[in-house]
Length: 114
Image (cartoon, rainbow, N blue to C red):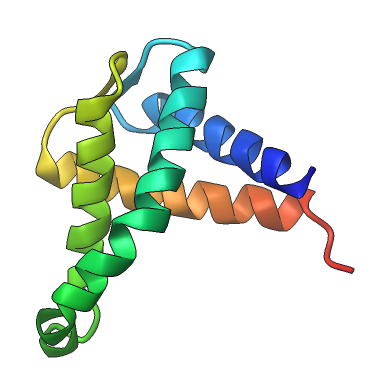
């Protein structure tokens, strides 16, 4: 049940992005559902490998390179899911940051800790 709630929260965060950023387009709520699912899978499977491979660069940039990785993951998902568009790499980095903030805020409000 908690996993479905987190998926719905991430979907709402993706669906809200076009209202906050002009560089992101989401055609429908179904597209946002699919994008949230693909983004979750990419962040679970691919992102840890990329972070491990780029650890020296991340260390040298004091962790700021993680923003680049997040932007690349967001941009890749936008390329994979039809109906979900991001204008470019800079827009993807900004959108990933705003998406993370929205997702965190909605999770903090809606999910109760035991």
